[in-house]
Amino acid sequence: MGEVAAELLYNMAPLALSGAGGLEVGSCTPLLAELRQLWGEIGKSREERERMVHELEAECMRVYRRKVDEATGERALLHQSLAASEAEIAALTAALGAENTTQFKVNKWTVSLNERMLSATALLEELRTMRAERSKQFADIRSEIEKITAEIAGRSHGYDSSPRAGDGHDLTVRRLNEHKARLSNLQKEKSDRLHKVLEHVTEVHSLCDVLGEDFIAIVNEVHPGLHEADPGKPTSISDTTLTSLSQVVAMLTSEKTKRTAMLREAVLPLVELWDLMDSPEEERRGFRKAAAVLRPAKDEALSSGVLSMATIKKTGEEVERMTRLKAGRMKELVLKRRLELENICRSMHVEPDASTVPEKSIALIDSGLVNPSELMASIDDQIAKAKEEHQSRKDIMEKINKWLLACDEEKWLEEHNLDENRFNTGRTARQNLKRAEKARVIIMKIPAIVDNLISRTLAWESERKKPFLYDGARLVAVLEEHKQARLMQEEERRRLREQKKLRTLFSEKEAMPRLKRPGGSFSRTPEPSTMNRKRVEAGRLTCSAPSMRSSGTSSSGSSCGGGGRSSAELIRPRSSAAGAGHCGEFLQGARRLSSAASFNYVAVSKGGGMSSSFAAAS
Image (cartoon, rainbow, N blue to C red; front, side, top):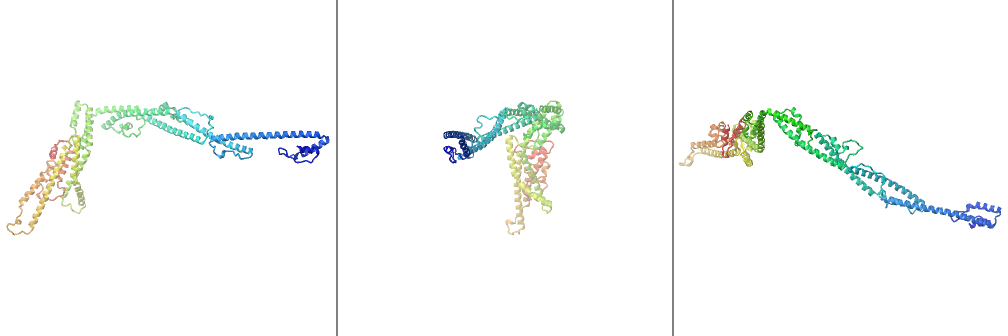
């Protein structure tokens, strides 16, 4: 201000001066000139002018100081606001887990505090927006977690949306992922529980349908919301509900098992009575659903209400009615069961038990000495034993049938070999030749079939502790006799071949020119009477061999020919089926016995003859 005062006091030219605040005073020049003019007109003295200049300087200093203080206060306020903003930014980045991210840091290299404050304010708004979004995610996840937890615990869900203490301190992605993982586990557990509940409810519904029970009443005892289709109310998945449903399923399953046993006990005699009395389909149709409990398939669904107490009671009443009806038809039923027993025994080629023959059974029923039900039970026991034995004899019977078929082929081959027209060129002759080739293959297997059959039969007898009878004869004895007969036939066949060779040699010698040497051995010829005697003896051996055919007419037309064949036929060369007559005649005798109206089976000892037993049967 010294220059200003000098200007006012000594009328110096105005100068452009700068104050302490860096403000130019040249802009005050018109005012100073006017002040100087006014002081001149007034006549102010030098002292007055100096005093007034000092007052003006003091007043200017006060104005400058006030402005400096205001600027200092503003700077401090900016520093304070900037520090608060930076502190909040640090807290938000720490809560969001972004401390090491340069994106969320204020640029401290900026000169102006206002620029730094603007940058901090923008960054703070961004972080606050991120915190709000992250807090909303946490709130939604916690709400879902508490909701599922409440459903699992079986309590009502009421989520408090107000922020908890410490909720804003950890909003990191790691913490969010932990909450998401927990929510995922709870959702999986909820899904599993819901699946179990639906399975239990479905099973309860199925069991109630089969048992004829009230499904809604049973489910209401567990939880009322299990059968209501209200989308606003979630299905109960609590431990209590699952435990109660499991107990209900176990109780209904036990009841189903008990009722199934009750119904099976009622249906089993009913089905037997149906079969026994040939009940028409109209009577059976009403109980077909109940009869399904006898089927072995466990996965087969039963019909609705089939295990209800009303159905079980109705089935029991039907059994009582059929039982009363059975009592009036007992004779007919006894005869029917006896016929069934005879059919089974006939298929096995054994004789049925004689204690329940039809005549004797009817006489006992008419006399009242035997209870018809007991007689029926006795026949049923015999049928059960016959079926069991039929099953045990099944394999051996198949082998016997195979053996008999081979014997048939053997007999046919023997007759085919005796046919003089077997080598004709006709179609039938060609078919017979093909059959003959197959028959020879089958006949070669007969010894192995017989041996196998003997071993199996002996094993059966050892297991059963009784002989295996076939049409009244012990099968092993028959097979042994058959083997012996075949051996004797082979021996006889060998003798015939030797005789044929001798006859051929004699024929050749007779055709050669005789040597006229006296006393020579070549001049001697065999006596015809000797050869004829050998042929007759060979024929007798063939006829006297043990055979498996019956006596009487059946034995007169077999391999011996009943004396109808000449000695030339006995020495005729044959195929391997030359002794097939024995097996074929055994087949005829066995089938004749099996088709007879009445049976006369005799247990034959091991060394007994089959022909004698067949003769007794005929």
